[in-house]
Length: 246
Image 1 (spheres, rainbow, N blue to C red):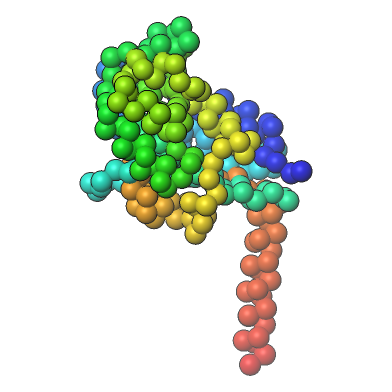
Image 2: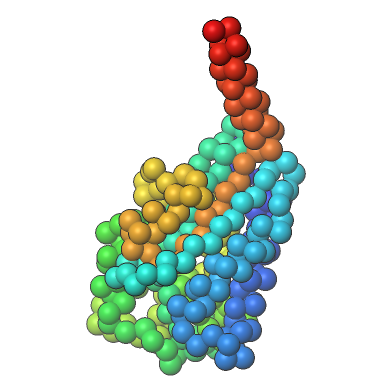
């Protein structure tokens, strides 16, 4: 069964890990102080890093960051939309996430002192009403802890006991692993991306679901792109020929 090539997954997730460390480093140095700043930087740096890859083994990579400037009632802080159109393999899907900050020490990891409060429960429920592919990303100042990701469905199970310390016993993964699962088709929702297939559609996607920051990640076969250009050329040549006959 056709899938996204392993070499592409490795290269993309390696770049994700580099960006994560850059964001944590800037947070540690006081350049960023709020999760909104970090999420904006996260998508902008992923845009820059992933576009530097250009293409891998005949697969063209397009990344585009979007940050809504106008004030909105935030339904989520982050949305990532994947669109892959490779030879024999077409997939479009997305995940959304809320962002929070906690201190972390690397023993499991364990979290403390942050801004996870009861209002996160309502935000998680709103995200889950949109898609089951909803998460909470937790920024830390610890390179080992990295940026941790929790399924929103796990968070709402805490009910009134929710806090940074109480999430320590929940299932979580690193942000790099979330991207890996997205590219391996282990997570991501194809339903919420219907009608949103190109980079130009991303701003509409963010406004539709009230998401502040977004990343479009596109993969296309270079051979397939050449075939598309050939078909367009044939069409215009046909139209030109019809006009000349008239």
